[in-house]
Length: 162
Image (cartoon, rainbow, N blue to C red; front, side):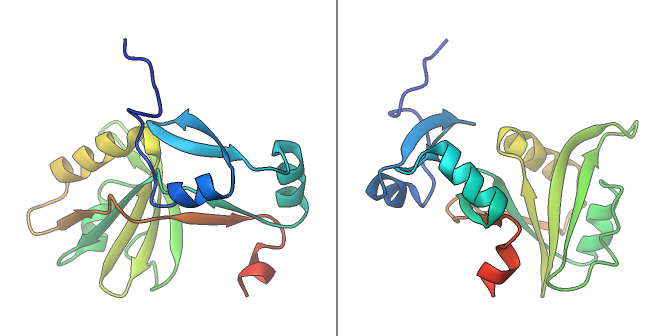
């Protein structure tokens, strides 16, 4: 078995910034990811729980789906209402197998033209293969391998974003 080292780990588009900010980096889902910065993990945890914290989640799978009836097509693979999703809104749902079992949980956002799907890092290859296999011809599956993705979390997230 290959030992994970920084030499064989992937990096997010924000990797250089993490290094500049002296992040402690660890292997996670095949990526070299920050676990904490100078203030320490406990201080960062408390700050996020009480205010807000910003997280690099670029290791997650990001896919843009386009095509005729793309919402109805994706809805055949998930139990969530994708057809009724309005532009700029996001829905949490799951990919399910033919028996209704959960394969992975995903986030789907309605774009002006298409859907933006975020899947878990550890399942992104399987989830992409699932979409390629199950979505009908004519649905474009555009995997975003070089895009950064950040998450703002905590009770003050809306205020901070505003």
